[in-house]
Length: 133
Image (cartoon, rainbow, N blue to C red; front, side):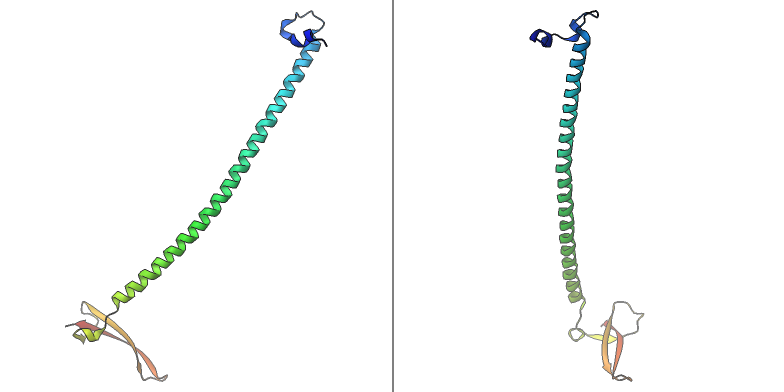
């Protein structure tokens, strides 16, 4: 093919021109080649973005799991610390206050638990209700 034929397009020729089928086949081949290369480029771009996205998803999922574990540990630490503080606040030394032993029905009473000597095994767990006087 000469330079003139390559610069000429199929739509410029008449229907009766003998070069028309050859030019149409060349243009069709070029179109198919560019279409396939375009599809390949788009496919490669999609794959690259999916790889980046999946690696980002994996890293973010791992990061979320680590953060959740850290938060859980922090919550456990805070809960244990709060529980210790609560038990310290609730602990009442009866020797500091004037108290008397009461029945369970009275309001604002304190349950005192202790082990005393006695019973078949040597120790008996005892509960007593005390109220401030």
